[in-house]
Length: 234
Image 1 (cartoon, rainbow, N blue to C red):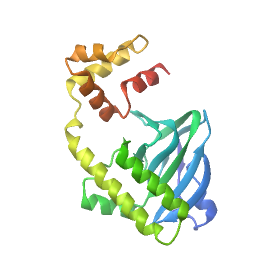
Image 2: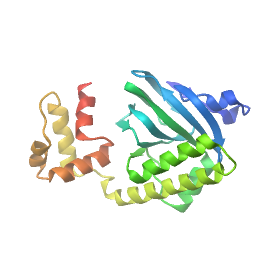
Image 3: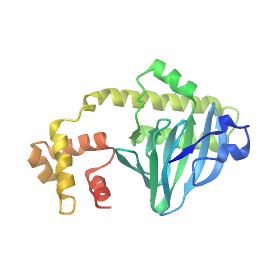
């Protein structure tokens, strides 16, 4: 396994700012105590299992990719925010169009400050909605401008993101223990993924409304039913 260390262990330099997150770094800045990278990832490229000693946020500006952890895999498409805590082994696989991501390394002091204020989740999570996409777009703009007010703006945007995510995961706390019917759905997918699987059939199997099933499955597994099946087939 590759273990990646960061610029805090080395002198601050443009080269160190650009290191460690694979892909091609277009722009690298340090704003509000966070290292921010605008990275491009080539089509059909892969990154073997490795880990980082800092927590990081990824905002997918374009394209999509899959991140595989030890027990789960997440499909991350355009507009997604992805949080990975420090020292979480993972690998990556990029699709036909590759991806472009804003990578934000989160300082330990920021994480402690946020955890003191709210219930910020410490496990990997992803989110893609209108509110988070707006924050992602603003963060990209602030990084591009890089003016003196950027630090204040970036700090505020990151705190706004943390507040929204904390509220969402507090509301989903009842999903910490998967309901039995959801486990049954996953078992059925694994048993029949080579065949023609329909949402209506799965819903009838567990006697759950199809819309509710699809929504809960995505929240629990970080991907749609279709994405999960495609991953099993691969």
